[in-house]
Length: 153
Image (tube, rainbow, N blue to C red; front, side, top):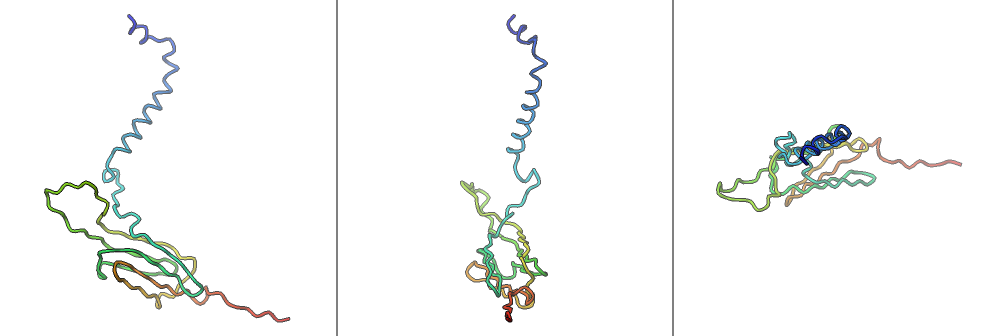
C-alpha cells in the first residue's frame, strides 16, 4: 500500500529534471573508469620528455632528460622557429609472470614540438647527448639579435 502511494506521487513529473543529472553522473563515471587505451588517448609518453628552454642575447638553450636512449633513437630538427625532438623510448619487457605493484616508466614513441619566439640559424645548431641529458644550443638569427643603436645629438 505504501509503495503504491510513493509510486503514484503527485509531483513525480516535477522530479524528472534529476534524471538528467543522474544520466550525466553515469556518463562521467563511465568515462573516468574506462581505460585510456579504449578512449583513444593512448599516448603513454604524451609530455615526455620534459624540457627547460632558456635564452640569452645570442642563443636559446634546451635541456632535456632522456635517460636510457642511444643517439640513433633520437631525432632533433629545426625549421624556422619550430623545434622538434622525437624518438622512441624502449623499456625491456619483463618476465610474463611478473606482477607490477607500480608502473610509472612508460615506453613508446614521443614527439615534442614547440615554437621559439624568434628565428634561429638552423645550420649552426649544436646538440649533445651525455649521461641521459640532451643539450641543444640554437643560435638566434642575426635579425633577431638586439642591436646597439648610437644616438647622435
